[in-house]
Image (cartoon, rainbow, N blue to C red; front, side, top):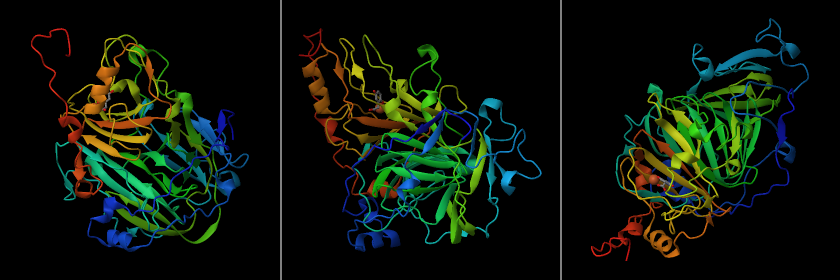
Length: 498
Ligand SMILES: O=C(O)Cc1cc(O)ccc1O
Ligand SMILES: [Fe+2]
């Protein structure tokens, strides 16, 4: 460790998860080998986490968003004053990973130098991985696995699978737009898993992963070190990084946004000033750690153009003893978000809660924003305080990590999802509307500490996978939450509702 701005993971923090014993109904209806397998297998309550506690207790991080970091697991393992000396300390190989064109402008130029026991290229040829992963979609411009619909969509929480399933096996696409071949667009996936990835690492050549755990912690081993994230935190694993997802608590599920255009950044703060929203200091980057074990076989699985390929090697890709650069994975605790809001009247647009944004080439228009709905005071006078009724040219995918969402009294459950596509009308449900009118807005109210919802908002119109549309988790009654909204129009009452 070269810097002292490092942080310990809270060793005392525990997170109780509920084990589900129901099969993955999202996949159940799909007449395929994997789904058929899943429905045949008996309930399984074990999980694999082979490593000792030492593996994740007391992890240390470096802090700061977009910093240039340096970290070494052995003293003196970082070369001094240059990137690729003829001979590196400890006989390490120097290897650069570029997350932007070499010539990208400085504030958009991302690269790191990794000093590793063997270079990444030391593997057998890539071959297609079997059995094929049938539930991933990347090229939404061409895939036959997707459909379009302007209907309001909502899904109940997915179930943890019964059969042994790791993060990659348990990943399935819900919706998305564009294509990694064009380097433009995104995919939104869900994952539900019950075991750690064993003896293999995954790397995504198509884009960056932003993972939102909803149940169960994730311990992610990366070439840069380890990241441990609880529900409420997010993890960003950029294009190309090799990583293995382990489940220290067993069953786990959550949401993933995959973006093809480039990397997330902090939003501009404009008139808010220099402080507020997500603070750069709260972004945590791993410290160097390496695994020098000889494996009879260790696979690197690479997603490339939406297809999975694998290559065999006899060593762990987590063999980086030291690294230096600004292209590194990170985590962020959304509970640390510092919200701003209206303090007199009217409802602020949700963009006020943007955590991270991936801008498009059009000013102010995002490929994908991560927006959080954190605990906060509502103080607006003579104002309908919950989210307004609206139609949006942007598309809104929402998830709930815990608690309940201010706009929905019923049906939007932790682990559930909703999609309000481009120009699809939506807003609070009837019960929330009636309760809000009845309660009035005389006193400040607080959205509970026990609640955390988020939204992925995009300017690109998502197509939805056929399995998500046919899933038994799709809430067919979602529209009923609004059909009860009554007309209160009264020509004789010009001053408000009767
Ligand atoms: O639709 C939603 O619930 C998300 C949302 C929240 C809000 O406070 C204002 C607008 C908006 O789209
Ligand atoms: Fe909305």
